Structure formats: structure tokens, C-alpha cells
Image (tube, rainbow, N blue to C red; front, side, top):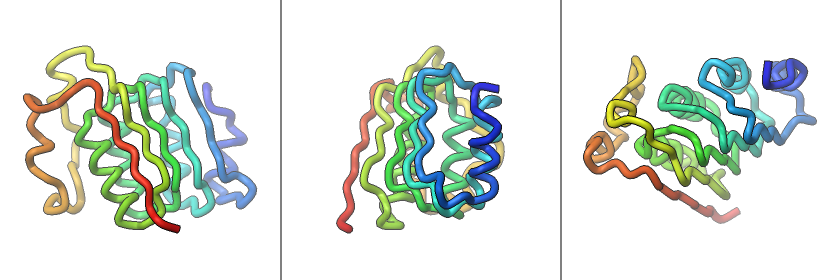
Length: 154
């Protein structure tokens, strides 16, 4: 397993000593990251998460968005250099910004390998679809190099 089992256990147990998780350049797939995302569902202490330079796709972007709708304690999230559609990055940015926790979100340099990749949607889209701008769904407007960096007052 690319992510240490102890890290997953600490996240799942809501360990207050674990506030940062950095898993960079590990070639993690959606399948590899699933235990970590599952452990984040009830975690209230993680503040910094870096999943950059992996192989994450829209499925992980969608799961991360759904987790953040319920639990938005992160103030720094780096998901750059993956395969996540800009729509999910924008939605994650919106969620974190609304909670006034966001200090930094980096979603730059999303890689694109096929047109159908950008059009693929996970099952069970948003629980609050009225929040999302329909223009973000337009695959024709999608770019492969999206950058989002936001700061909120403390």
C-alpha cells in the first residue's frame, strides 16, 4: 500500500497529533487513495493535505468534494499535477472558501490524456447541484492548466 497503514488509522481515529499529510509523487491512483479519503470523512484535525503529482482523476476529485461538503477543516489543499477536471477544483475552492478556512488551494497543471476523460463524470454528482455553475460542466471550455489560489482572512 503506497500510504502507510498507520497514517490511515490515525486519520480514521481522528488523532489530534496528525494535522499534515503529504503524499507527493507516489503515482497514487483513485483506488490507492480511497482508504485515505474514507478516513477523512470524520476527521476534524487534518489541516494540510498535499496529494500533488499523482494519478488522481475526477473520481477522487468528486470524493474529495463530497467529503469537504460534510467536513471542511482543511486550510491548505494541494491537488495539482493530477487528472482532475477544473470543475471539481472550482467546486472544492467554493466549499473551502465558504467555510472561511481556506488559506491555499493549488489545483494547477491538471493533465489531460483524452477528450473523454474530461467529459467523464462520476456517479451521483453533487448533493447540492444548484450550487455549481453549469458553465463549469462544458468540456469544450475545459483547460488542462487551471490554477486556483485563494486566501481568506483569519
